[in-house]
Amino acid sequence: MGFKCGFVSIIGRPNVGKSTLLNRILDEKVTIVSSKPNTTRTNIKGVKTGENYQLILIDTPGIHIAKDKINRLMVQNALDSLEMVDIVYFMVEPGEFIGKEIKFILEVLKKYEGKKYLLINKVDKSTKTKAINTANEIFKYLEFDYVLPISALKGINIDKLIDLTVKDLPENYKIFDNDYITDIPEKFLIAEFVREQIFRLLKEEVPYDTVVECEMVEDRSENLLYTACSIIISRESQKPILLGKRGRTIKEIGKRARENLEKFFGVKVYLDLWVKVVNNWQEKDEYLKIQRLL
Ligand code: GDP
Ligand code: K
Ligand code: MG
Image 1: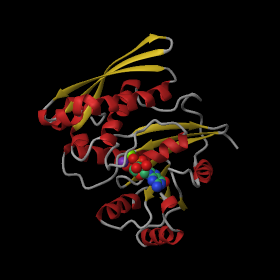
Image 2: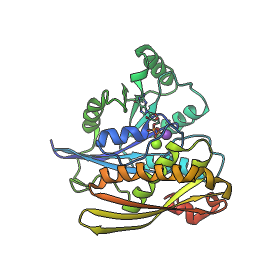
Image 3: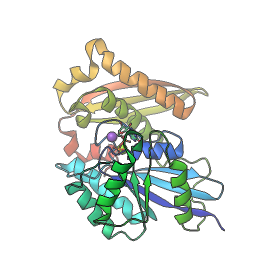
Image 4: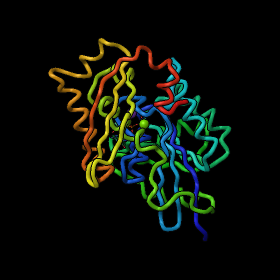
């Protein structure tokens, strides 16, 4: 049998664990994760290369009922990914209610011609019965080629998922070099790692009003990467929340993001953070481009 190479899109409602799954399959953090919905704003490709296969996976923003421009662009991004993939993973949680959003996704998938996998994620915190019931409920609307209970967080059934996927990939030449793991430009990845900590450390609305731009990245020596990011918020009143008492919050954001960047790049990282206020950046093309939505 020849070399296998193809594309897989990971779709689902917000917060079902799509980004966690991509990182788990790659065994490397390329896409950001938080307990808040709509953390992922744009499609992120990750590449896993084995001896006889190359799997190109696309992590996507959660498909939801979008109420403004940025959210509409996010959902469109996720839907667009389907046009280029051989396989789709539709991820749900056990016990998930089959509401408007899931029904919408199932309608979209009815027209999808590639292989369809139904992944019931987070089985580490559920019962088998609950997972099976969820699959049965979904099958009333649409049948899938495979159903697999998994835990992206704990790594349950992930090897099995990869095996099945590789079998379904088309025979094709390798597209990327063996050590290539993501299509995300370095500057964007750095900005995303900062944005992740904002989603993790700040409550409710501020993360949704934040975009991060990496302004500078420079090798200062063989073992030191200097980088500077602007954190852009949409109102002056959000500044004290972002900074925290005596700058404690922004310091913690910087520390955690730096640690993750050091793991990713394998060198010491110096991270400068600046704060800017841009009213209604969500409506401005320049900032939607920074977020790779335009
Ligand atoms: P996404 O919005 O679909 O990309 O979801 P994320 O990957 O950002 O994960 C959302 C939340 O679910 C985070 O708090 C994850 O740690 C958590 N999560 C993801 N996968 C699992 C899993 O398999 N089990 C459990 N218990 N939690 C998970
Ligand atoms: K999330
Ligand atoms: Mg995500």
